[in-house]
Length: 89
Image (cartoon, rainbow, N blue to C red; front, side, top):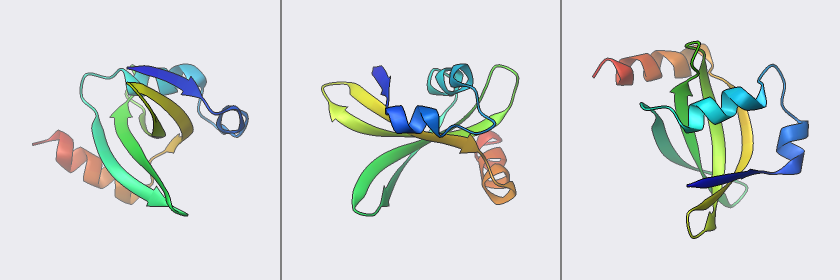
């Protein structure tokens, strides 16, 4: 699966490094979830970086196994609690 950055998403990163995004997308244990905002369908992928930092990365399918990274951020406390419950399963 190939990923490319939406230029605006890369420029908008705050407190998340691009290499952390790559780590989340290649994590062995990751939780994808379908999402939609303003009529745009995408996936959120929740996972941990190599250092254990829990992040959410948003990607949208471009076609034929290509996806575009449209955002990344830290999990909120509620999201982290749900993610930890999922990890424990």
